[in-house]
Image 1 (tube, rainbow, N blue to C red):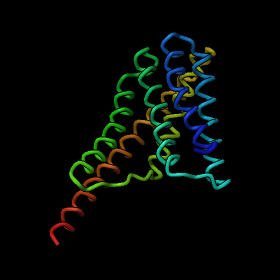
Image 2 (cartoon, rainbow, N blue to C red; image 1 turned 60 degrees about the vertical axis):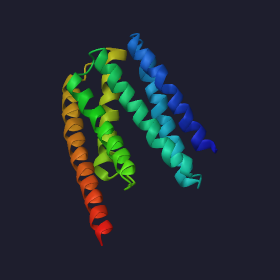
Image 3 (cartoon, helix red, strand yellow; image 1 turned 120 degrees about the vertical axis):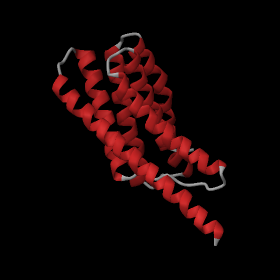
Length: 183
């Protein structure tokens, strides 16, 4: 257990706070907590990579914290009708597909590692920017409608591209395992 991992655990503990804030209409608190979570992600990443504090635990905790935060915020924003439900369904379904595919591969005795690729990293950045714009506009009464629509459709496109990439990788992995097991 090192400092970056403790920061990541702190980010995980912020998830229920931001969901509560969104659900109770406390958008300034939600925005502030979301910003703190974002800064903590940058800080733990910096400490881990630049100061040689990487760990296996951190390699698993960090993406878990990111996904818990993003999925929770999108679900909360969808329930409160701050964002269209279709974008929530798309974002959440992507993560369920990835986790489900990895679990299925493991269950079938063909475990696979999922490493984030550029399209997924861009997707995460776009998802965060969109959530930040929505929370910022709700918290401070700012009008980012045009930017929100543009970013929302970028999120949709990148999410679909990411789904396509991971499905392709899963099929190739499962096919390669089949070929290798016959040889």
